Image (tube, rainbow, N blue to C red):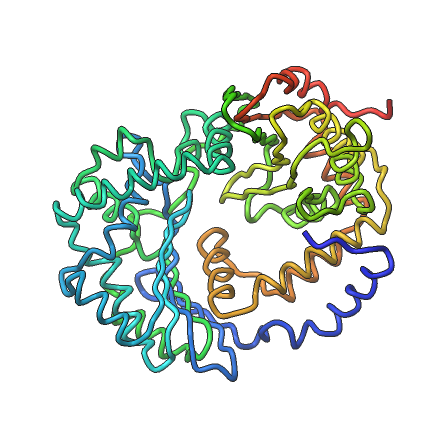
Amino acid sequence: MLSLSRSSFHSLKSSLRRNLANAVPSRLTYQTSILPNGITVASESMPGTRTATVGVWINAGSRADNPKSSGTAHFLEHLAFKGTNRRTQLNLELEIENIGSQINAYTSRENTVYYTKCLSKDLNQNVDILSDLLTRSKLSPRAIESERHVILQESDEVDKMYDEVVFDHLHAVTYKNQDLGRTILGPRELIKTINQNDLKEYITTNYKGDRMALIGVGCVDHEELVEMGKRFFGHIKKSDKPFNQSGNDLPRFYGEEIRIQDDALPTTHVALAVEGVSWSAPDFFVASVANGIIGTWDRSIGTGSSSPSPLAVTAATGGPGNTPIANSYMAYTTSYADTGLLGVYFTADKTADLSLLVDAIQKEWGRLALGNINEDEVERAKAQLKASLLLALDDSTAIAEDIGRQLVNTGYRLSPEEVFARVESITKEDVVNWANFRLRGKPIALAAVGNVKTLPSLSEITKGMHFSNK
């Protein structure tokens, strides 16, 4: 995260205000329409470009998997590029290469996304390809078996990415026996059993018009995109009844833990979490500002002792002889349609005393709840948040992602200007009230992999959530 001195953040704040109109697309260029089958078509034109990003965002991810075939959503993503009823895999690959398009897809816990970046003159052809991939995938038994091996190899690779492993474990304990607790790839034993019927059932159940958004950004004419939507996606049906991500019950957060002692790992990975904010929560941006105050730090960058973040200073100098007590830490927010996780993820050498950083994190949370922060810290965090927003909207693909994510997860889109206004209105009092509501006395969850012997017990950590001035 960007670190600003007291003298510089005021300058950045003024600069952001001056340049907002020129730095982000005008609100007037954003348009939406709803097709008869419920698909939302949204576009944002970017004058001066001859390219476009066009994609389909679907409100369905691994959370929508059948527990008995967990991993189906991700499996489908792989098979979409293995041929359709109209295009063989070879023809599909040649067609994309011949027009120079860049096509991508990904699956998250709540969304499935397919998008291309292309020349504007090829927009119609790219929307046709996207429709083919999503609605006419062949799902041949031979391709299923071939991709099964690829996905199992991918699972092996993910198992070596300990940051991902820790967060998968964190979801499993905080949302145990619930859809959000499942991994995106699914367990290996179920990857081995997913079949064509599972894949077809997932499409039939979840690929519904009212759960989809067709997004175009760049050199895009909105009315033309609407017509493409009707032509290529008009055959998709609506849900029989309005879709509710939570079903009948909101997700339940469990303050539990998982610790995996692994002496072979040189680095220990730890994630702490409280129940966080959903995408549409009224305190979503307050949570982001609070996280900005807590900050992010990495010892490889060589800073910390002069950081404006007290937690960064402690992480960098809190050990014997003013040595680091961790390798890195990151305040994070992971949001979903109806819940979220919020906390701090950190890494440390296997010989480190993990209790030192856990204690420092809780003291920092307590500092927020007790109001022991100043206006400059709040303003600095707001400036950093707005700067990161601008940096994240630097091309048509990033803007399409922002629009698509908001539309399918919340049903509406806040423009950058609206986001700026909400962030600008946040006060120190808002942050303090938020910390008392979201942190004080709340259950806490923990996931850790590595040498976890010096990690305090969960009961000790939970006690530390009752903040005091002592």
